Image (cartoon, rainbow, N blue to C red; front, side):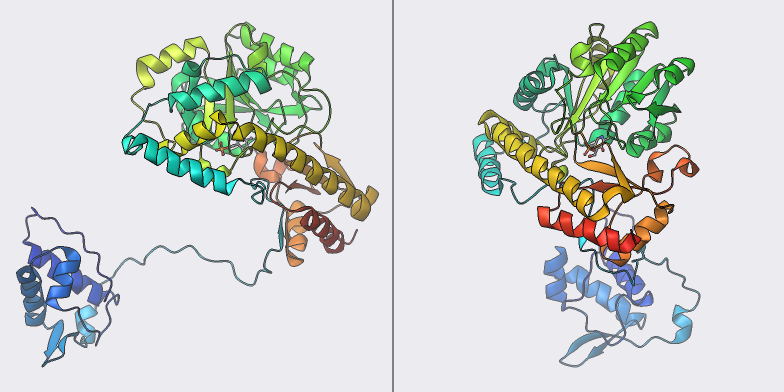
Length: 467
Ligand SMILES: Cc1ncc(COP(=O)(O)O)c(C=O)c1O
């Protein structure tokens, strides 16, 4: 049957049959329903649209009277061939379509830093727990849940954060959200748009985008080998600093304890806040763990952000923030009006996954796996690219920055890689001003690739870049 999806107002000013006739007319004029096409029978269309047969019949009579359709005996109604001048002057909006990029070599190996390993994802367990969540709650999960996120899951997160990241909090201080950007947006409203936010430069572009789109003032602060440059931060007018101390995004340095203490002191002196984004702190390949800023903070100046996007799967859209006392009070006073954005069913499933110990064993398995992939990446780089490149930020996380010693622009590196079916990623987007980007550097994520794909990918890059 011809696809028809009219929006009809049951209690509209125009009778239903007229609304339907007008809709079909527009479809004919725009070419969505073509000339000589057969219209559905009255009964079929009435059933499909949940209308009475009489309504459809009246609409068809109207179309017939206006000459848009003709009846063929014992066959049904057909769209009439229209005179050119009927359609003349009718200018319809083109439906919006995203232009596809053609003539591109298919991507064989994608060094996307947002991907995680799916081969070892415990599908069967996740399926079982999803079904169990639905049974256990007898439909309750289909209603809106706690605005902060499901309490039992927050309790599991609080326990996990203390044990593995040294974060001290109760479940009541945790707010769940469907992604870090959602949480940053809410946080920005809570802190107040009047404040100036200092952002690492280069830094996480999605945080910068939300803050700027919400109208806050952002100041780029350069990095040194330990992370955000404190001298510059102190000289800025900022009172809020957003940082990624466990694994600076994108350069990967781990902020040492001394810098963490200095940063905490800065927040205290400025009566400000530090937003600590610990997006992939679970994966560390060298050195001893350094406590989170939140765990070191004694003044309540740190907001801790975390996510399950890297440690579990990105599409689950469960991220969280841990608020200090002062902000928690603000949240309770003014912000509980905002409903929870993460799916209740996924939260319940994640709660069961954590409670029954699957989360811990999944993390352990992933740590071993990513350590192996990371080692493979390092050895493939050594084997194929040797001293023609150096690696930046290789001590933790699921991505590295590759610095090619040959003078080549970022776009050229990306384009040449694409020619051999390998996708590598730009760094320029992480700078406040795009012309600040340094040439000859690209970002490589390895979480979603197998060890053999990693090796092949690096070998192909050598070929593509002529190293
Ligand atoms: C710096 C940084 N923060 C946070 C995230 C996580 O974002 P989300 O929680 O929206 O998936 C990412 C990417 O995964 C990231 O690179």
